[in-house]
Length: 318
Image (cartoon, rainbow, N blue to C red; front, side):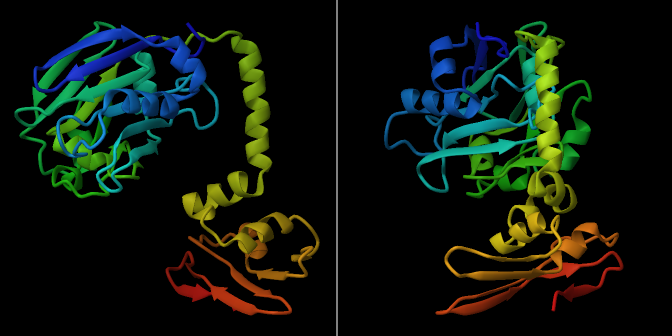
């Protein structure tokens, strides 16, 4: 088996309340590196065309890759794959939190959930005992994702839905801790199966080819992240919103390391950004900053982005 994988797929049938473990397909794992690719291949192979995304025929697949459970940056993220009720096509969403680590410690690379339960339930999976419990979830139904997780066992790692998923909102997500798999309506698919939560636990350790070399390389990658103007600066201060800044603001974040924040491109488009460089080094807490103006021989325009300062007032760059 490829190092980094646990080597097992767990398939759960909610209708019959049965389950079984199967070996991970090494050929597919090598061809589609990572959980998103493996899960998408499974969805393609096992679901016929034309199925109802909110029907029992749809699969709900939780998938991890070879880095999950390691010390690599971003290795806590798992993928959820299904036919999307929002688009009708392949749906996938990724999520942080602790659920991916829980799956790997349980010795599970891929979790396939099929069919629909006859009544509301939740799953508790113990990888050390190779056991799956089908538990009543009536007491959790209607509760939000935070409240649900607080009521579940602290010995497990959880992936849950809230009222949006229960009521089949087409863009509902699946939550692990405070993170969310928020794309393509995967939470609605989980709700359509009357599945409130999946909880996993275990004590298995990840088998790496050369742990010491891996740790050394991971340090190099972390240093690259820390020095990156977006991943190491904007993401740390502004979260995902740092990625959503207009391109000239991101460029300014990079140029803020230089004496001037003015640049001209080969297309004679000049970009002038103000506010980003100062905001990046300012002690004030902001959620989004920047002012961008662009001009060329043929067109000109401007955009203003509002931001909230640490004293709660709303302002905008001028």
